[in-house]
Image (cartoon, rainbow, N blue to C red; front, side):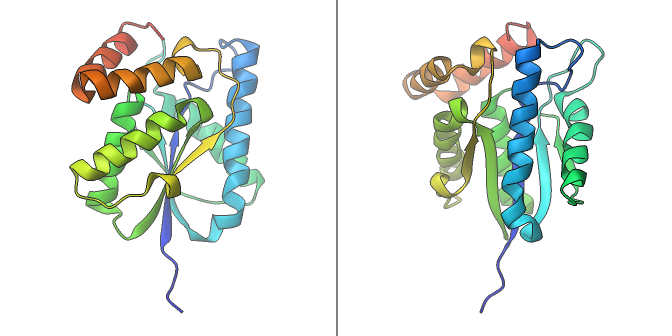
Length: 193
């Protein structure tokens, strides 16, 4: 029997971990997201090679999402007896750049791994589409249904609603990915969400 491939796990950060300054509902949602993610790894824990955190948006103190989420995630993993390397993708500001970096990294460095991309349920359709889109761009035969894993989360941010994400996907298909990527990065840098 052939040995199973190692798994590359990629997690969209869902913002900064900051229970002091975030609204309580958002903190509860973020905690729920990270706990559900950690628990979902248990059946595949022996095959995981790396976990990547994606989130390059900085807070008022200049810390990226990755820097604030990593200690919380590491603590949750340790509670389950998991010692896994957590790498940081600080180049991602929005979902489009996250998936683009994910697919590019997969092709350049982790082609012999089974990829898993975790995101919130509201962002599932967008991530599903983008994995297929960027996979084709880089000549990778990726099946998004086997790669994108949605997690339930309480999220009060305006860009995280299912309605916003569906509208974004429709605009990408209609107006083109490059235009929408530039607009979304501009909004993020201006602090719209």
